[in-house]
Image (cartoon, rainbow, N blue to C red; front, side, top):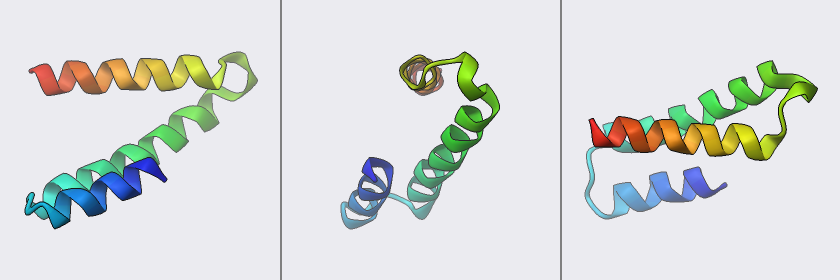
Length: 60
């Protein structure tokens, strides 16, 4: 929900469409990671790890 809202907001603010589509891709990736992790990893751990990877990618 938050990523969809962020994607719409980025379009409303005049960002390129690629930014919005990238945000929606992140949503799909997050779902895949959570599905693969199964019961062995808590949702909080996966979300935190995903957020850290995103921050790392933004810093590059």
